[in-house]
Image (cartoon, rainbow, N blue to C red):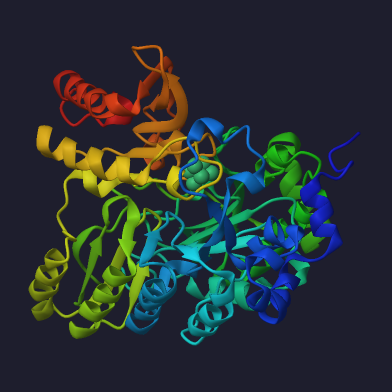
Length: 527
Ligand code: SF4
C-alpha cells in the first residue's frame, strides 16, 4: 500500500470522468430533471469543478454532522462559488453578481477570504442562466472548487499602488489563459492554491498558499518575484517554504505549470487528508523539490534569489489611500464578509457614480474601490456609510473573519457568521476599539477555512460541555498566530474551550488582560 493506491472514492470518481465534463450534463440534462435527476458522482463530486456544493439542510445541529450520511445532511439547494481571479471586477460585473444573488440566491452573498463571492439557495435549474450572465461580464465558476487550480489570489492594488514593486497581473492572466478549465490540470490530488502579489504589503497570504510569487527586487535583474511552495492550514498546518529562486514576470507561468505538474504526477492520492502539496514538500525537502522542478520539468537551472523584506504594517486595504496617479482607493471590510446581492449592487452603483471603473475583492473578506478622484472621495465615503459600510471600522469589525459555518456548510459543527457579527457588536459596546490590529477568526470545524491557526485569537468550532454538563456549540481556542512578521501558528491553549455563550466574555477578558500587561507597542502575537 503506497501513497497512490488503493484509490479512495474521490480518486475513483475523478478517474471515471473528468470533473469539467459535468457542465454539459447540467446544461443538457439536470436543468430539466431538477435535483432528483442528478447522478450521485456528479452531485457529491464533479459539480465542484463548476463551483457547486450541496448546502446543509436547515435544522440539523452540529452534533450530528459526523454521524449522518452526506445525503442526510444535504439540501436540494446549492452553494455556488464565483471565482474572481485577482479580485478584479468592474461596476458592471459586480452589479451582475449582485443581481444574480437577488434573482436566484434569495439575496445571499458572502465575500470569501480568497477573493470569491459565494451564493446560497441556488437551484440546479437556474445554473445555466447564471453562467450565461456571469460569463457575459467576464466571470466564471470554472474550477472554483474541486481538485484543481483554484482562483489565483492577486494583490487588490495591482497596477495602482504608489509603492508597488511589480504588477503580477500579466502572469496571472497568462496562467488563466493557458491552464484554467483545461484537462491538463483538472485531476490533481487535491485543491491547489496560488497567490501572486507584487505589492510590498504581501497581501495575498502567501505563507499558506501551495505556490506563491511575492514581489522582490533583485540587485542586478530588477523587479521580479520570490517563489514559495507548500503552505496550507487545516488539520496539519504548514507554512510555505521559499524555493530560493528569483522569477521574472515572464517566468511565472512556466514555473507555476512545473510545480502543478509535480503535484499532479507525484502528489499523494491515497488519503485525502495527506494529499495537499505541503505533504510532498515536507517529505521531499525544499532542495529536492527544486531539483525535480529544474531537472525533470523545466530542463534548466533557475536563478537564485533572496527574500524580500517582511511587511511590518497591516496587510489589508481598509480606509482611504492615495494611488500612484493622484486618485484614491477606498477599502471596506463588511463584517465577516457577509453582504447581500442588494448591497453588492449598491456598491457597484456607488462606485460608478463616483467615477470608478474598477473594484477589487480582497483576501480578508473585503472590497476596494479604485480610481476615485480626490473631489469624489467624501461623497463616496458618505454613500458607503449610508449602507452600513464604514471606512474607519473598529479593529474588531475590520479584522474579524468567519467561515460559512452551520448555516450552510455540511461539515460544520457550529454557527459562525451570525455569531461573529454579534460578537463584533458586543466587543464594540464593551471595549470600543483597540489601537492595534487584532484578528479574531471563527471557524465552524477543524478545516480552518477562515484560518484558525493564523489569527491572534483563532476559534475552532466543536461540541463542548457547558457548566450544566450539556453538550453545546463551542470552540477550541488558539492564541497568538499570525502572518508576516509574526508568521506562526497560534498556541492551542491547553484544554481551553469556550461555549458559544461564553465567547464575548472570554474575548473581552483576553483583550483587557493584553491591554493591561503589554509593553508599549507590543503586538498581540508577541505578547
Ligand atoms: Fe465548513 Fe469547516 Fe470550512 Fe467552516 S471551516 S466553511 S464549517 S468546512
